Image (cartoon, rainbow, N blue to C red; front, side, top):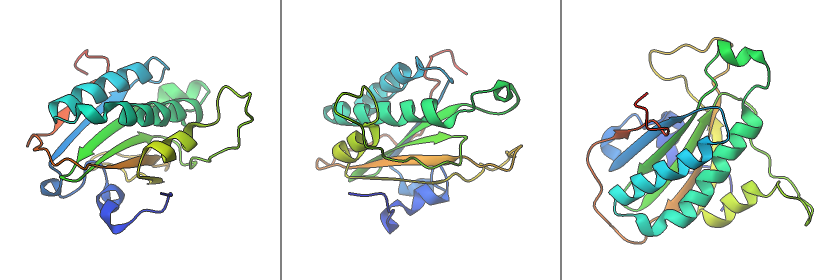
Amino acid sequence: MGTNGSTMLEPLRQGLPPIDPSAVSGSACCRLPARYEAVGGARRFTRTTLTSWDLGDHFDDVALVVSELVTNALRHALPGDTARERQDTSVRLHLMRWTSRLVCAVRDPSLKGPVAGEAPDSAESGRGLFLVESFSDSWGWHPSPVPAGEKSADGGLGKVVWALFRLTDHHPAPERPVTVDALGDGR
């Protein structure tokens, strides 16, 4: 456990999806709107994707982690002023599957890294990263590279926060990437 990456996660440092698509047996991504209803969309997207990969038995743990990562991105990473209209404030959820591991990653426009806090027992929030660490095999974050063909208006590249799950069952995965809008409206 922990937040330091390893060579096993090198594709995440190179960009999402990984530069070498042959290294991934399945990948899917969706763009989430900058509103809290997006968490439900992220969970539905995760259920659909894991089911199509025959990994539905991993849904509960992965969905909890996805929910926490997306909530953190929406709560802490998006600008709170009118500048939102001038920049891309979307959050993107990426799911990548290899034969023996699954990575969920959330890309957001903030350069500020996640910080695990100490929440009092009576607090209603503040335990998200503790849950991410508890339910995944490892997690971390890194600055996000600018995707090919895109430019960052403010010089900020944003970041990617990821969580890795080891898969004990070796299921075949689909060979084609899937891209879906979490709201299902085809954007």
